[in-house]
Length: 607
Ligand code: M6R
Image 1 (tube, rainbow, N blue to C red):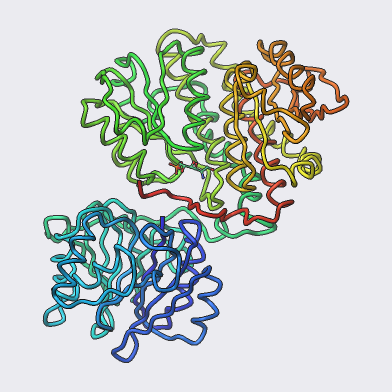
Image 2: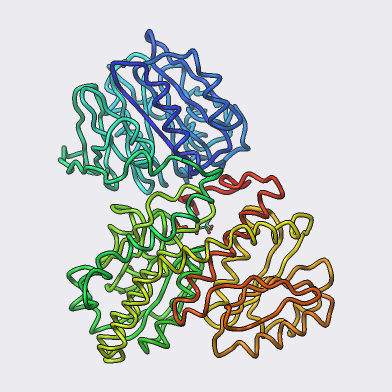
């Protein structure tokens, strides 16, 4: 949550800061601001609106050193006075991503020292604290000293009015990257903001502080020792974060799924057999020892874990439980050192998932696997084993391609474990590999249903509630469909296993309650059909996404969207696509901000 960018160069860096913020806006979009150092002064521009407004307001601002921020409000309402950067006595300016937990006591101490607070944020204490330690122009030392007094999580950028070519940045618990240019340097919350200026990047580690100058930079670890960190060349290109022909990132990302799946499955589909090594060298020794699996994740990533539970138990025969990461981390559980703890995350920075992983390790779980879309993210670094989904940058707040690639990765995990446990013979292995190779094409076919789904979406535009039904491994898909709809269209949507309807939720069904159902041609189809009849008999309007070979027919109050034929175990991946499209087109009908839905942010790096 919150995005930060900083730059020091021998040219006007304001457009770089603003373009960087536009890339980072998915991390928070309550307000935006920047500050440049110019002629020995801090020149600050802030806006209570989006980055586009900041861009207009800063059109005539010039500076060769500066920091910028796009905010997701935690402390203090979204407003200009709470927008970053925050300043201390017109000398020090700070941008911050994270939460300072001891800000109240620091605020009291600093107020007693005569510092005047002009915002309700936790961040402002950092500015005054750095100011209080700023002696003889040593901004690095002042920042390092201030950081020792902070409790909480942060990625920060700091500049001083009398220090025209130096930026100090630091991270602990929130991501921060250093961009290495020629005679110019940059910092940002993620790579997408840096691609406009460089592909050379240093991933700062926990506790690192970096002194960024025009010609060079110096990194210090948590203990204050100078350290070298490798410079990576990013594989991303600027086009991958451009909107291109699409109206929204969500639409673009829905359509990128065939390629994202092909990329995620590339190494496996090009080989003739499945090996544990795709999860890391240690998988060969860890996998044979595991007795069960515990999946920890939030939101959409949790739904992918819920689907995987069906696969892992049925195909690999291994007990699996799935927990909401924010709940697991605070409950007393019974650890089993032979459990494989799997964390799933698009960003790899979700605070609750990361904390759950750290908690699991602290209780004695040593076998950890991270499934994640961002290399070098905190979750990847904290995990012994890893599998990267290769979905590419996901910018729309509503997760789409990350979800289907997570499912692909989890299916690979299932197959590898099934093989190790003697539950997958060579013929079955080849058959699954064949189905995986075909998956991108199958998804492409479902995407072709887009116009029909767009037409269906019109029905939902004036509805306030919707129910989503599914059974078995398609129940989590119904839950994902409901999450997508509520997230971007603000329609209240709930998912139920279809058999559960009669135990309460059926009371909600009337002509104003659209009921969406996922209807694959699996062993539960006839049961599901009965459940749907129960809805129809109560005047409910049904929208059924049915496999072609179910031969379900339209009738009064029953709208059928015909999917391709049943895809076996991979069916949940195919059935996800129309629900994503439905949510997208309903949001368009309602005119909501699809990529930046209200109150949300992409990477939830606070509790
Ligand atoms: O980056 P993560 O996958 O860890 O994020 C987890 C959730 O915050 C995320 O999936 C969220 O639920 C999405 N906005 C849903 O579309």
